Length: 192
Image (cartoon, rainbow, N blue to C red; front, side, top):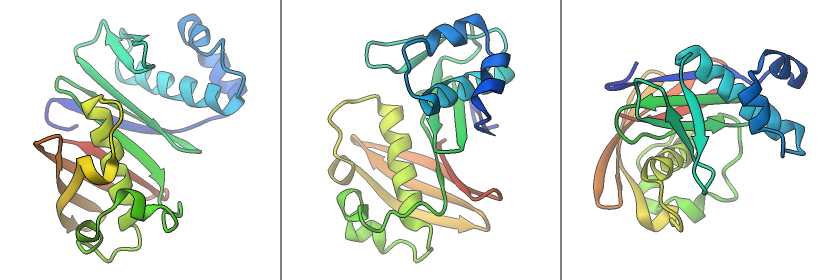
């Protein structure tokens, strides 16, 4: 639980199992997907949503962003990596991102991370944490054409074991985020 919402993560299962457990609505939502991995991702997060909010349904904006219907929550954010999905439900705009902790950000981190952000932590996971934080904030804002390095900045971090509390600035707003280094080798970041 997070203030005003909930966050859940689940592994992405096998396509045959996901299709077997999917609702007719879920199956319709992946009809146009040629890629098995895209079908798995969509069906996995929709299965997780059914566990979280059984009576809810999902519609999509023209941008592809999911919108909740028939839910006690007003907002949804979804993330996936190669083997995991995350869903956040909230009554406020929200964002969530999940990545494998071992993912290599070394070659690209200078495109999204400032020198000031790099200096905030010497953790081997820090580049991934900043990426996840900026992805979560991007999803929360729902804006197009965002430059992660220019438009979003992590200002501070307070580590506490496997959890970190972050403060970031995005689009003239100060936002707090929570980062969890999950035992299964994933980084999960969500807005508070």
